[in-house]
Length: 323
Image 1 (cartoon, one colour):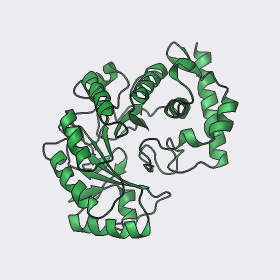
Image 2: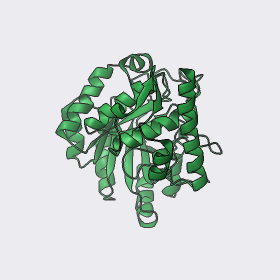
Image 3: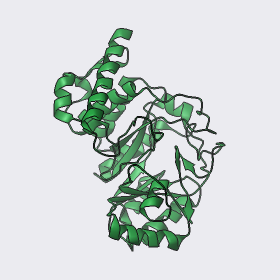
Image 4: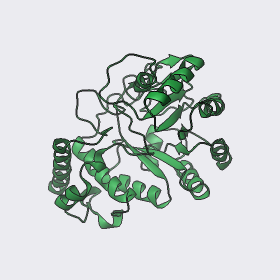
């Protein structure tokens, strides 16, 4: 059996469900009930959340051949841009994922990503030698202190593995960062800049409370907060600006060193779309349908872009006023 995100099941023709936007990546989950105990994760060791959840997305399971047949059909009809395995960290899941990578490669030539927890360069290399396009090693937290509060293990060791992997396998290493775990703007942007400087592709997430997790009572970051981090990430990853160009007051971002009007004209809605590997749009991973989106899984309309930039401006002004 393998789990597919609900949107992926729709694309593969495995489930009839109404969706606003189809995923352009097939998201697959291998394993269940992680050996780690991340405070925000539905699959954490002590989580009381439903076993079929990862963030707010439900992941129904399907028999192997049913899934592979759906993949064959979807390739003919939808043209998926990427396949991403989300590997729950138990003893067997990573080895099972390697078999799944081979099975999927026999059906399609689209790029494959594996989001896992390899412990060494050797494990990263083994995945890449299978033909995996990107290996994602989730850092999640922007600082060692926040990591210690919300995750197991060592932030320093995880970051060092990311940097060494990116140096040895340039262009093939990615990570996740979550906005809203307790960091300030400067800490998050410093981490984004450091990851970019070392050649790590970063997917930006908004913290999302899930019932049954240790952080179920923590609120999501305000949109104005998330929007100003999205713009900083967009400037950094596209080499249009650096953290050293930005202005902070007591950890809060108050200026990009470029006027909002200029940025709005040059970048449009791009900063507010889903970030990460090419072809990854993660519909409703951080959102509830019917509410305003943190990460847009498609190009923004003009009205949406205007509203997003207004939120950026509001966030910067509130930061200035708080000083």
